[in-house]
Length: 211
Length: 57
Image 1 (tube, helix red, strand yellow):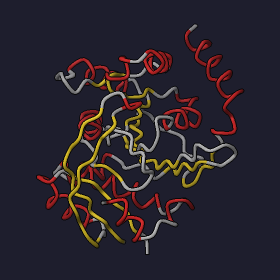
Image 2 (image 1 turned 45 degrees about the vertical axis):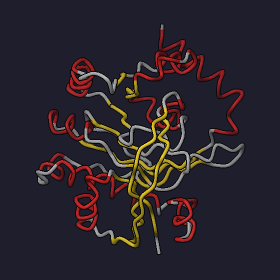
Image 3 (image 1 turned 90 degrees about the vertical axis):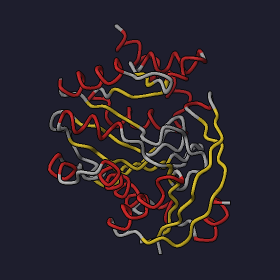
């Protein structure tokens, strides 16, 4: 019932806002998951999960969000509609990790934005947090790095680069967590140059953004 | 030349740079700044010190 309601809400939303949600896929655009997978993506806009949901809707992805979204009714409604898992920075999150492990062991797809915050500059990256690696090490699932560049302007196509999965063999070979997380982040950095928008940013602009 | 920026916490910057160097990234410059980090949907904002590392590959 909720699934029908979800599709109905998304359908109505897209009927009005479709010019803002056109996108083009790059990379492994035909990729299909083989069992459980953690999708790891950068976070340039609050609408990023929506693009990923449109791409992976057949796999029924479960999104991870912060518990802060419950404070406002519209974001609370959207996260309820998509059956998100809530990560609360103020607690130990035992239930959150238990739910994530249960879903991954059942072969589901989990979507995490490891920066933990929206980066509104649409350039560069915050530090990646390590919870996705903890979950991957516990379950042995693949990690799929994805780069998103949302245009959020009418009739301009956003870009989604679907990368090569980081397999258990690859991240298990790196004992240090920070090094393993940096491997995944470095892949997303690489993919950012494969889409047209991010390639055009010059060193001077980055210098200006960094100040 | 492709450039990008990674913001990292001051206490982890050395280790992060080494990890990125292992992936083929070279540091062009780095600077410290204060960032207002907006959590999901801008509901909670925190100001923190971060190191901006400009990288090239």
